[in-house]
Length: 74
Image (cartoon, rainbow, N blue to C red; front, side, top):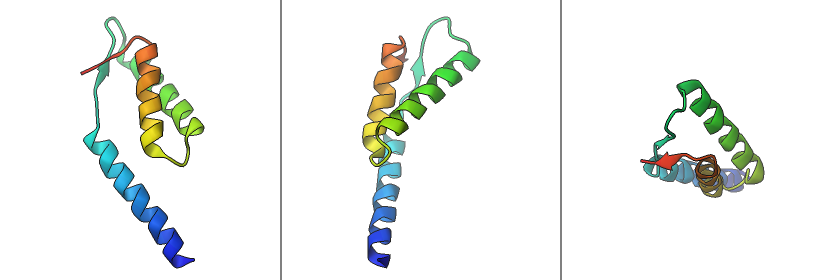
């Protein structure tokens, strides 16, 4: 049982490192910081709910969500 939990922890750590390397800044003209933070939080929430076991898929879903809301990646 210990080995299984260790593998999951290692996988989560590697996924977090990969996400850090894939960081993108999104912007939308005319959007306040408060509105952008709310949109990012909503997209992250929905993405994590849709793919709680795979952070890489959740990250991609959050990016797609922001693009659908009119944000562009920089």
